[in-house]
Image (tube, rainbow, N blue to C red):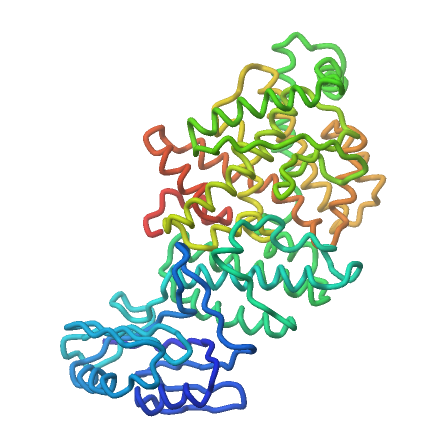
Length: 532
C-alpha cells in the first residue's frame, strides 16, 4: 500500500516531557531538535512539537466540554500495536490522563493534553497515509473548530488592545459581535509572530480535513485570517488581494450587462405601476419621494415591521425568544444601518430617507431574520453540540462576511415577505445599488478614478441619495473595511442562487445549512453537500 507522509505542527508546554513521551515511551526517533521545537518520526510521518508561550490552552468543545488542541493518530500492524499497548501500561506518570484501550482502539493524551488515537490494522505493516481512506490522520472536528475560534478571537483581542489611533479598526475588532466568550475564550497573544505560528499549525490540521464544504470553508477562512493579520501588522496588500482573499468575493467590477439587466427590470416594474414619464432616474426619484416614511413615523413603522419580521422568523426559521431591538437614529456615519447587538439597538442613518419597503429590508437585514437571527441560531447550535464552535464567528470581518450580508440582503425572501410591487421594486433597486457600489469601489481603488467621477457614476447608475453616495466613498477608501463593500453583492448573489434552486422539500435542511454553520460563498453553493 502506498504511503503519503503527513507533517503536523502541534503545541506543547514542556519540551523535555514531550521528548520523554514521544521519544522514550512511543519510541519515535528525534529527527530535528531546536530551542523551541522538536521533530519526531511518528510511525513514518513527521510531527513537530512546538513550545507554546504561556502554556497550552485547551479550548472547550462546542458543547462546553473541555477538548484538546489536536487529535491525530495512525493505524498500526499487530507487532507495533502490542508494543504500544504494553508501553502504555507503564507510562501513566507521563500521561495527562489514563489511556483507554479497546480490542482494536487506543486513545490517550500526551503530557500537554493533545489527543492521540491508534487503531489495529489486522497485521498490515505500513502506517496509514494521512490522506488515505482508512483511519490515518484523524482531526477532531470539534477541537479544530474550537481552536480556529480561539485563535480568531485572540487576533480580535490583540487588535482591540492596541492604542486608539494605531489600531486599524479603532476598537471595533475583527469580530464585532461574539456570543461565545463563555464557550471558547480567546487565545492570548503578545505579538503577530505568535499569531502566525498558530495559523501555520492550523494550516497543517486543515489539510487533513476530508474534501467537501467544510474543507473549502476552512481553507478560505485561514487565507482570510492571514491577510487580516498582515494588515494588522502593517502590511499593505493590494485592493484586489483583499477582495479575493480577505473577503472571498470575485475581483473586478460587476459586469455592466448585469447592471443594465437590473435597470431594465426596474423600468418594467415602474411602467407596470404607471410610472412612464421621464428617464429611469427621474422615475425612481419620484417613486421613492412619494413613499418616504415621515420622520415622525419612523419609530412606529420600525416597531410594526420588527414585530411582523420576528413572527415570520419564529414560524419559518427559529424561535427568537421574543428578541427585541430599539431604533437608534444616528447621523454622519458611512453606513445606512447597523446591528448594534450589544446595545440592543438598530442604528439607522437618518441623513437618508426611507420608504416602508426600504425600512422593511433594513429591519430584516439587521435584526430578523438577518444578523440577530444568525447570532441566536449559531449560539443555540453550538451550545447543543450540533455545530462546531467556529459557527460563533458568523460576524467576523473575514470570508464569513459575504454570507452574513447575503443572509441579510435575502432576508425578506427567506421569510416570504414580499407584499406587492413596491417591495419588488425596492428589492431590485437594492440589488442595483449593491452591484453599482461594488463597481464604484473597484473604480476608485484599482482603476484610479477620482472620487468626484465615482460619485457621479453612483448618481447616474444607482440613483442613490447623496448621504448614501458619500458613505460609500468613505467606506471604499478604508484600508480594511473598503474591500468588504463587495461582500454585499457577492453574498446576496450566492445566497440567492442557492435559495432559488432549493426545492420546497429541502428548504428546512437548506436553512439549517445556511444558519447553523459559517460559510464562504464557495462552501455555501456546495449545498446539498455530498461530504459535509
